Length: 605
Image 1: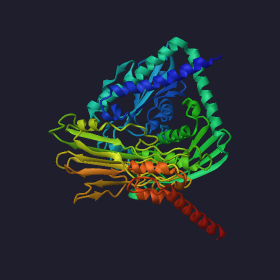
Image 2: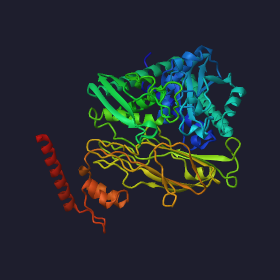
Image 3: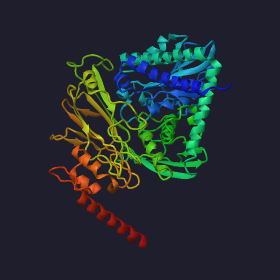
Image 4: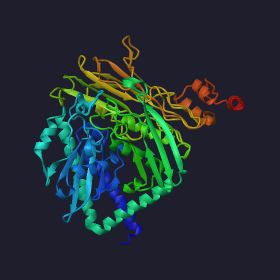
C-alpha cells in the first residue's frame, strides 16, 4: 500500500508526541523527587514484532535498553500469545536473558512496565516505561555503596504480570512494598508509571481508530525503512576502515583500578561494527555494565554522530552491530553488581568518539566530565519527622551532578549540564531542602575547570551543602569519574581540569576524600560537603581561540587573567580588563615559532 508523505509526517510526529506525553503523565503523577523533579523516567512504543516505533526525548541510557529487555521477556519468561487486554508486565532484573544474560533492566532500581495494546482483539503494539525508583531494598538506601554482588542491590523481580486484565495484583504489589524502605513513594511512583503506560495505550487506540490497522502498520514499516536508509547513508560518509581507542575507569586506582575499556570500530559501506573485545573482565564492584546498558550507550553515540532529523526508531539500529564479550565490564554476567554501570556507560561515549575523531573530526566531541553522583540521607525528627525509611524519619536528597561537556569542531562545550547518557534535570534546591534535612550553600560555575582550546570545554560547577541531620545520622555516597585522568581534549585542545571532594572545607577537620568513587561516608551534624566538578576537554589549538572570547570569559570570572595568558597567549590589562591586541599577537606568534622549531628538531632527529 502506498502511503502519502503527509500521512507519514503526521503519524511520525503523533507517535513521538504520545511517547513524550506518556513520560509527562507518569512524571506529574509521581511522588518521589527522582521522578517528579529529576525526571528519571522514559517512555517508548513498540509494535507487536518488538520493533521500536518511537521514544520520548528522555533519559538516553533508558531508551534503547527496552529492545533487548522485551526480547528477553517474551523469549524466556512470558509467551506473548498469552497477553490479554489490561495486563501489565513488570521487571527490574538485569539477568533475565538466556542463561542469566544481562539483557533486562540496567539495575534493580530501574523498574520496567510493559502494557500490551489491543485493537479489536489484535495485539498491535506495546506501551512501555522505565523509571528509576528510590529504593528496592539492598545493603544501603537506594542501593548506594560499593556492592560486590547483585543480591546486595535489592529485590530482583523476574518478569511478572503486576496487572491482569486491568486489575492490579495486590500480592505482587505487597511483595514489592515489603522490600523497600520507602513504600509510600514506591507505590505512588509505580501507579504513576502504570498510568503513563495506560495513557500510551489509549492514545495509540485513537490512532488505529482514525487511520485503520493496515495503514498504521504500513506507516510504521515505511518509517523504519526510511530511518535505516538514512542511517546507512550517514555511515557511508565515514571512511571505510578500522578505528580503535582505549579509555580507563576507576582512574584513581581505587578498588583495583584503573580498568581498561577498549573498542575497535569497523566501517564498510553502510555497515558499522563496534567491537569491545579487549575490555577488562567484570569486577567485584557495582560498575559493571549489563549488555542492555552497553547496547543503549552505544546506540546513543551513533545517534549523536548521525543526522538528528532521522526519526528515532528500529531502523536507526539495523546497520550497527555490537560485539561485547560476556563476563566483561561491558557485558557482565550473574552475580555481578551493576548499580553504578553508568561509570562504564559514560566513558563508552568518549571511547567511541575518540575512536572516530580522525575519521569524522567535524562530528565528534572531546571528552566530557563523565558520571557524577551526589547523594545523602539523614534524620532530623524536629524538621522532617515523616516519610521515613524503614520506619524511621530518614530522608534522602541528591542528584546526578551536571558538569562540563567536551568541545566540538565549531562550538564550545556546554557548561553545567547532565552529561550525555544521563540527561536529567537538576532538582530545585528548594525541593531538596523541603524534603530532607540539608542546607545548600553554593552552586556556581567552577572557574578554570574547562579544557582550553580553539573551542574550550564546558565548565564544571562548585557544589556545597551542609547536613542538618541529627548526631551522626547522615550517610553520604558519591561518585565522580575523571578526577585523576582528566577529560581529554582533541586536536591540540587541552584536558578538562579540577575534580575533588572535600569534607568541611576550611575547617580544622577538613578532609579531602581519597577516591572518586566512595563507599558510604558518615557525617556529623553541621558537616559540609564540597565538590569541585571537572570540566570538559577542549577542541583545537588554544592559540587559535578568538581573543575576544577569552576576554569575555575573564570578565565573566570564568577564567583568571593569568590563565588567559598561560593557556591562550592572550594579554589583558588587569586593571581595566581591556585586551592588548599587539601584545597578544606578538606572544602568540612567538609561541607558534617556538613550537614549529621544536617540531622541526624532532623531525630532524
